[in-house]
Length: 108
Length: 119
Image (cartoon, rainbow over all chains, first blue to last red):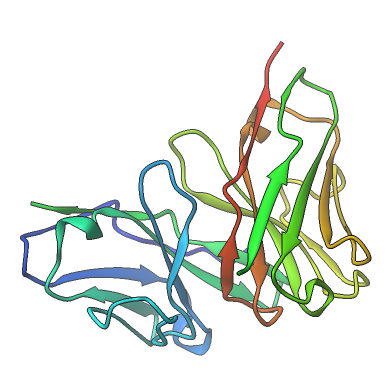
């Protein structure tokens, strides 16, 4: 099965930029999604197809994917951005989905 | 408005069985693949299973293959997950999610149904 890696935690000051990485073998050849999960809530899609934003997601959220690493960037971080963030891909080789282990973002 | 509402979560003994349901509304149910994703207490998200819009194709995580069966009733807009031979490792919140294209993204999620496995 396809394995994704993420840093356990990222801390960012209010108004600054947070970058969350997601690593995987030849990840750049896959389409990466990112989900935000706040405490006690269901996940919410924030980035799909590497860099597209669903309606209602602020422009402060952006994504990129190249080589073996995808990155979720949160610009001008706000207290409301504190959450766990998960990357997600479809692995056509095994016909399975994979989630990264998640990164906790703290705005401090 | 798209809505997904899970039900059926309960306390079950190890080795027991349980069936989860997910009632969908606000979209053409049969046009979308649907997935189950679970989250053990304090842990990350784990994809469990997916079924195509027609129901003809199903996919499973290695951890549940042979024990869980995903199905759907397109006439009643309902997704199911039959879980057999449950173990402590299956205890989790189970979310149903709509798959926009069949290979992600999961653009809508339910609020989850809690499964507890304990004697």
